[in-house]
Image (cartoon, rainbow, N blue to C red; front, top):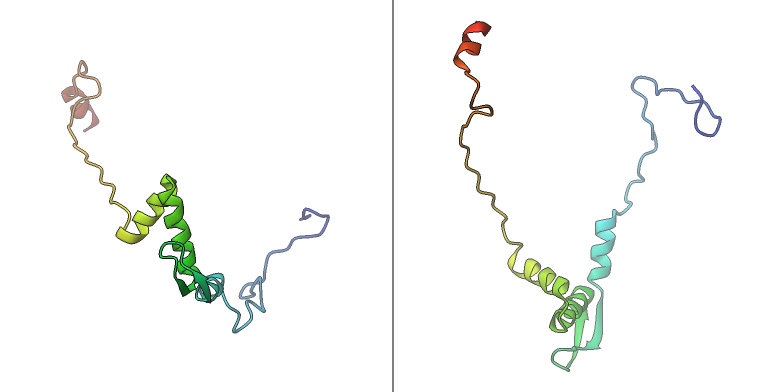
Length: 115
């Protein structure tokens, strides 16, 4: 079987992995790295209170969202409300009423013919 670039493709042997070395032990996944950087603290002036504070990157991003929401950004407001109070539940009411698809067709005769 010929591959995309002219090479040949062959299926893996039974019990053989497509990535035998796999992911190196001790390597960090993306969420671990993101959490590490979000916890970095920085001394800055709080834009809401005007006082010098030590804040994490999470704090800074939340304050930036608050600033955008106060300026009228509806998406920022929704993000803040969802993270602060949880996203609203979306419920769907469904009522099932059995009605014939074709009211003019008699189904009694069809049921007896199938038996």
